Image 1: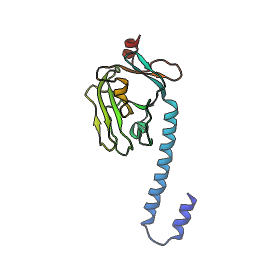
Image 2 (image 1 turned 90 degrees about the horizontal axis):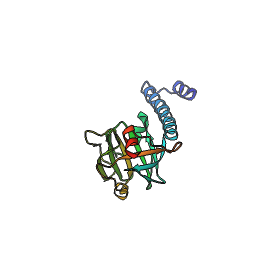
Image 3 (image 1 turned 90 degrees about the vertical axis):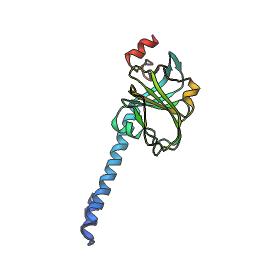
Image 4 (image 1 turned 30 degrees about the vertical axis):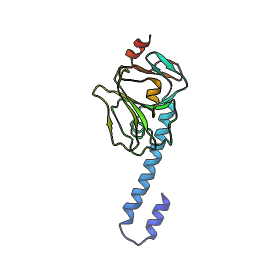
Length: 178
């Protein structure tokens, strides 16, 4: 910060330099803060297995986006999405693929974990994809994976916790798989 003040005291170019420098400093601060929030959120909310109609799919790694920042950024910071990996977004029925580098399958879920819609191989650059009216959560997987796993409207999807290996979806899903 002292470098900024020293620079401002040495320049005689007028009042237009002050807002530009202040905006640049604020942008750097915001980017650093957002990166810290994203790292914290990713490390705390990992899930490992997808459960489809009671059948556990091993060796999957699903990250759960619960914070406002992680929901907005989603998979934008990923270069690719490997089979078995994905993003689970709680409390949302809209997603976008603006700025993404790869296609994804979008699975919309209601509050019980039942699939309300499957949008396969969505190309990057779509502005906004809105799920059916009952949608409460979204699962994003690699393109083509929904078909490979047999995910269709009406299926029940749950996610198991890394620490406890228990289903962490809603109570209705736990009853469904019991």
